[in-house]
Amino acid sequence: MALRPPSGPFTLRFYLSPRRSPPPEGSPPNTPLMSARPISAFLEKHFLHFNAAALVDAAKGYKAHKAAGRKMLVSLAGAMSTGELGKILAEMIRRGQVDIISCTGANLEEDVMNLVAHDHYERIPHYRDLTPQQERDLLDRGMNRVTDTCIPEHEAFRRLEKHVLDLWTADDKSGDRRFPHEYFYAMINSGVLQQYYQIDPKDSWMVAAAERNLPIICPGWEDSTLGNIFAGHCITGDCKPSMMKSGIEYMIWLADWYTREAGRDGIGFFQIGGGIAGDFPICVVPMLHQDLQREEVPFWSYFCQISDSTTSYGSYSGAVPNEKITWGKLDIDTPKFIIESDATIVAPLVFAYILDM
Image (tube, rainbow, N blue to C red):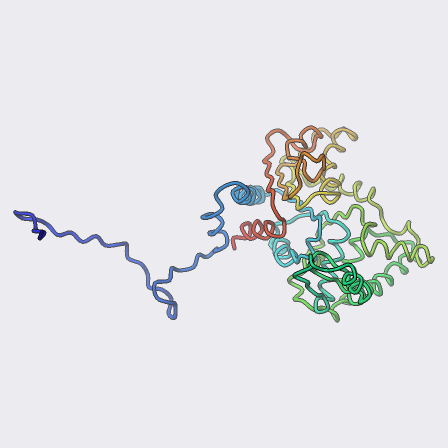
């Protein structure tokens, strides 16, 4: 059946889409222009529910906290430095988005090890298939495995030992004392390690931190390779244990810093993983309130944790943020976020959003 136009006069209308600017010269035809912040735009469009939405919410909360002129602590547990989180964390530090770091001794040293020995690292994608004999073969070759990444004993551990031992023995003779992270800052700032650099130093969070003299808390530093090496040199008489400032002294320093810097609005707490790197610094607030009666000091004013731990097992790493209210760490109205996922995937995305990437 043929279609006929309606009888009588009629108007033909053309509906035109809004006029667009032509694409840049050389662009493929019909390709939409890229967003100025493509990662952030992708997250806003697709990360809409569940842990994905929690990621975006936490990142927006972080940005709002910093935009209000408040300071932020970032804590690093696990093997974040060997996972090369330093590439984006360094940029966060350079752009003033991190004001203090709490980390394990492993994260402190492994960022610098990657800086000076990266070319000698080996990646083993199928590490789950290794036999006990293959693991022993790695040990015999001086390769220490962290999941899929092997750190070379000689080029990483012993290369740093050679130079830090000079600082340890000099301080032992002079009677000077420093915190563990200050020895790393001294090595980096002296330039003695530059001869070994095997990555762009802009990708090292420790280099960025040293350049800004960023405050660092490193509780339980003894539980690290350099901590073990230091103990060995104390046993052989090269230096004395008392020359290294302790975890108690870190807490004393942190108590003064928090009291001075928190103002009336408090400081934020962004926790990657759990363990001592997170629990040690967050406890400074209940200590100030309950043990020193500094009740005017504010609670932590933002909290986010990236964790894959389950709360029912009773671990600190799996504790939900509200549990921290009972310990006097967070207040009722503190913005609280938890992202139950893999920190090696989540943390770079959160930081990219904060940096408007």
